[in-house]
Figure 1 (cartoon, rainbow, N blue to C red):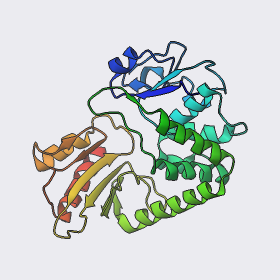
Figure 2: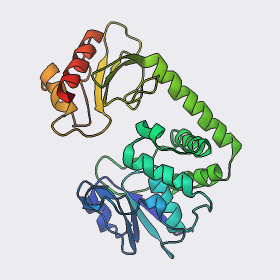
Figure 3: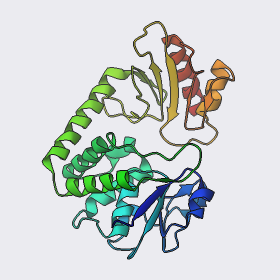
Figure 4: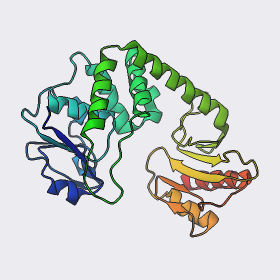
Length: 286
């Protein structure tokens, strides 16, 4: 489809003005961008609606323009269905994709998915590290057709059991397990403390398989004398904000959102401050 356009924006008004035929998870809190033909949305006030990746193949015949707010596996499943390119026989895989979209990757162990589908999922995660797709920060609309179609082709290959892609997923899983083990320091009060030279706040499961409510990571890079601190929650907790907790601990230059926040940027903190952050989050969670 040479005339196909896939558009992305972090601004609902801007994306709506582009008048997409189909929108896939173009959700911004309570707001949603509607497609002139079809709107795939299932978060917030639309909870309970079908996930995009669960739509039937060819659900939007003649689609020319697709609008999205972000790109993940659920989004790609919706795009595949809209384009009539959704591979046959992958229903269990798409059920797993929906589970992860609704519950988070940290609850993968509760999915009940077959090992073959877990392997396919990790293959997609490995690929997604190589082709990142983000909306422009200024709120404008960007044409991301070429990169999204790379994701489409990747999923088609994965569901066709492309061995190179599946093996890349195996290596990705090994790398994540290694990071989990090497960064893990402690698990107390539902909070994991990690020391890592790269981002590790997505790892809400301990090496032994316990699921945490929160993670605090002391990221020291190559400097053992001090580092940055990131705090995050696995799921929203009413009345608990990582950003507010960090402001209480480190002053107004710290902050972030309810689900994730950081200590003041550019300020190297000793690892003992990360322990203090763990204690503060655990106290709030209790």
